[in-house]
Length: 182
Image 1: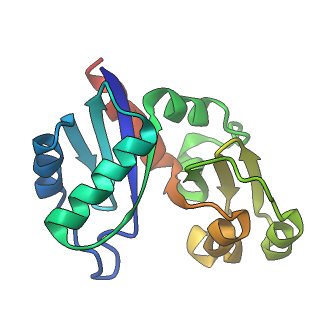
Image 2: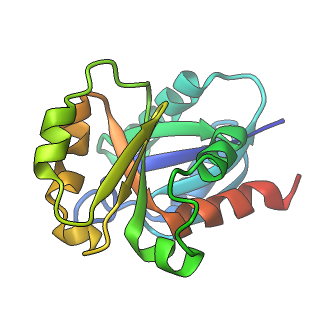
């Protein structure tokens, strides 16, 4: 059985797209996913499934949410191996974990962006901010805070592909959950 992580974008934020994780877990198990676990309310799901591709799984989760909860949400699915690689290959590995938990964010994308507008990315960088793109993961170091970063709000638009961000702590916890019952 393959272990997957689904990252939902824009759920349970500001009173919009309310998605109870316990109900979502049960619904996903009813459509054939197994060992479904969620982490915090922002739409992080770890599960097992052996036959479908990432894109088929994302479509199934999206459809299930639309049918059961009545709204559409972006879904990006990564394998356990891809998640582990994103952590292992972090260009910011020298940042101590305690600090990284607060200031390092990873944007996961469905595909590798092909038309990267570096000039736009650099023009939005604030003092001290750094970014690196490795494959379909965009790493953003925001020492002044993610919420204050102008670049953080524009990454998806500038890269031109769907993306969703998670902080370092969440990414590491998701890998722990995915690795827990191997």
